[in-house]
Length: 312
Ligand SMILES: Nc1ncnc2c1ncn2[C@@H]1O[C@H](COP(=O)(O)OP(=O)(O)OP(=O)(O)O)[C@@H](O)[C@H]1O
Ligand SMILES: [Mg+2]
Image 1 (cartoon, rainbow, N blue to C red):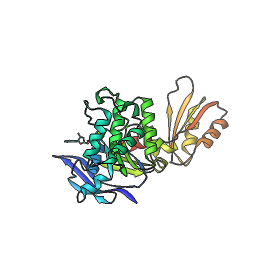
Image 2 (cartoon, rainbow, N blue to C red):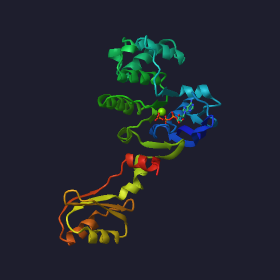
Image 3 (cartoon, protein in one colour):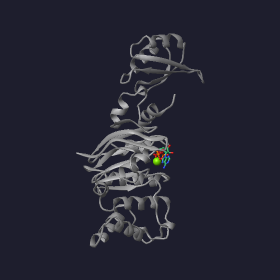
Image 4 (cartoon, helix red, strand yellow):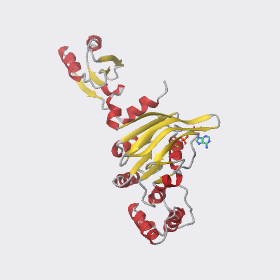
């Protein structure tokens, strides 16, 4: 079942188009990494999904509710952690969350229970009585996350939840998001690609307002140009080795780098999904040349990101 469907979402600011005709869908239970360079349109898209920013054209549904025709129902199914979490510095953690809970229409006995629940889930128990102004950045992010969790929404939309955190805090928030994903669908934006590789089962890449890809990390890396790349270091006359490699069918290009320490370094570009290591090694060995390195590049999300968003 679809938790989110974006249908031709479009947003212009004056003459500037921030998001162009974005369509995608997200299934229940998915953890989606929303990636793109600065200014790509991630925050704008997230704000449209959450109802904070009306689309210029197009619409979306959250848990089956149209964000334009049924905004209250749609909002009730989502929790949003904005890019810059607006917190009230002069409130204590539990006071702030209590205030947010009441704003969200949570009332009566369930306020206390929900507060306890989100404070516990986000590891805020030791800080519940602290003034927000005294919290470290990581704990402020946790308060933002706790806020998003109030009301136990089906969908969490988290705009750079680990922005500005140190590696230990990043790991803690990542584990928290992983745990939350058992009961929630999660969309998160981030610039940390390794994070996405670790926790997301779907990636949406946006660049200059356009959705470039929406797929699993595995499918995205499979057919990359970078996928067939091999690097080799050997000693000896490079000319015949390059010629023989270039004559080998899957090879598209061989680049010889300036030897630095007497060793030639070859970069072999081949069809995605092929492995030219065995052939390359056989050629070098047949010449009787020594070889000290041969490596087939394992494509990562970083390769996907670069290939889809670079300008050349
Ligand atoms: N209220 C606004 N008025 C005018 N332009 C805006 C407004 N909000 C966003 N933009 C522009 O829309 C584009 C997309 O911005 P957005 O904040 O969605 O990018 P982003 O992908 O979230 O970037 P980042 O990674 O830096 O957070 C940017 O060029 C931005 O300057
Ligand atoms: Mg942003």
